Amino acid sequence: MGFNQVAESDETIIDEVLERQRILETVINNSPVMAFLWAPEEDWPAKYVSENVSQLGYSAEDFLTGRIMYGNIVHSEDIDRVRKELTTCCEIGKDDFVTRYRVITGSGEILWVEEKTFIQRDEKGRVVNFQGIVRDITTEIKNEIALRDALESQKALMEKQKALLERQRALETVINNSSMVVFLWKAEKYWPTIYVSENVRQFGYAPEDFISGRVLYGKIVHPEDLLLVELELEENCEEGGKEFNRQYRILTASGEVRWVCLLYTSDAADDLLCVDLG
Image (tube, rainbow, N blue to C red):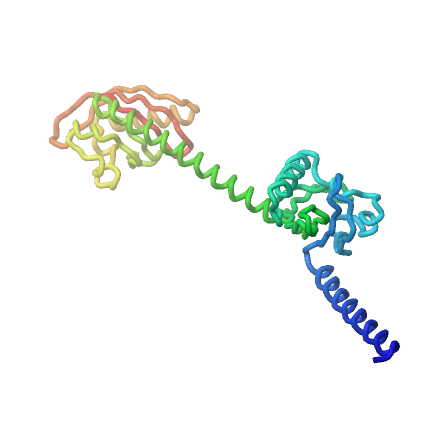
């Protein structure tokens, strides 16, 4: 084989290598993944960086000329951790390094990135290069934070609900072991019942009688007292009163007449939170 043929063969090989390199660079530069080749020196000067580093607001030349060192764009709160993690990987002989940290873009924006780096060594095991790919994961981190916050909020809400239920049970225990009967009424004719404590049974009724609407509280108020109670309560509400105190008679399920004292507190425009003392 002549010299010219060897030269042509070498040129063909070089052309093929350059073409493959061009294809690879085109693929990388059209992807969200940025490629770096760093020297194992302080702040990691770049020997190579893909053009799509522009997504961070820098040009490849910024790094290749040394105007910007990669270590200088790592967030000040993360840089020491990243250095320590990478140093440890090198010292224990690991070939790869994966971590997440924040970087400062050319415009001053803070982004989260994930770095996956291959630690290249010579035949004596000495580190000669860091071959890394860096990917923007800001959206993923924000989603993770939002999910974590939502879970924490849900947990806090569940704990609050648990505490409220425990408090409610404690209050109901106290009420149900006393002569006091608690009602929550709608501010409507005859006061339909939303809630009533279990100890309403002392009057011969079950809570379900009132809550289901089978029994309306106004219907058990003594007929001779009902109109006066209605008028006084209506007048109290119109005057913006928040409390009401009135003695009157009710009829138990067995027809017995009982005197009660009504202590009422307004809870909302349409609801009456009332306490009935036997």
